[in-house]
Image (tube, rainbow, N blue to C red):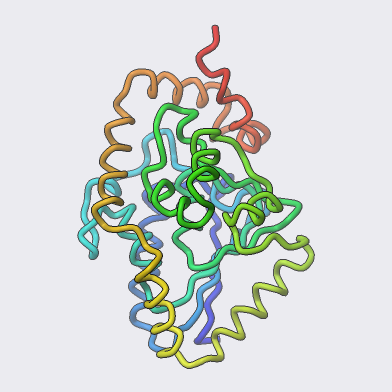
Length: 264
């Protein structure tokens, strides 16, 4: 359907976010801009256990935090800002683990719908010695309020679908068996409307809801600094040694152990 695209993340085994995913998203954004009939894009995963897992902590991130994109922001932030400001509606259909920069990706989407039984959503960065750097600290307070934003960011733990819905982290949590049908019906309904009306309405909402470029740039700059702290490097190496990005069970549950990383 030219007015409605489905984009499927498929980067085995865990959909770890590295430079290649941002390259693909940048290419997708260019194609979206060049498709005048397109109205809606739904982002989903081929792996029901991992929507997008988290940033690649082994260093395979290329220059996405330093090279500048079309918006004038670093590629990481540029990707998210351009997605949010696009005239095309973006919907995240969430199953599985969505943490860190992956959570920031779905926050940059216009809407988020999650599987009630199979969603683990969070910003665990503080637990490994850094903080969200891709817009999480800027977007979450507007969606969930200051106190809950601090709970999500400083608690560095997972939130299930029902809690995420109650907080406003996602639009709705639906029974897993109903998620596909609900999102497809909504996407098709929106795709049937006039593109100019959709774009104008989205632009007006953006005017009163988006963080400034200066705040986003400050966040990613501070994140880069935090990555250089010795304790941060110690925590990252500890969680990698325990099995992150290698062991499926640990990859599923790793935020649970963040409070014990530096215990001897």
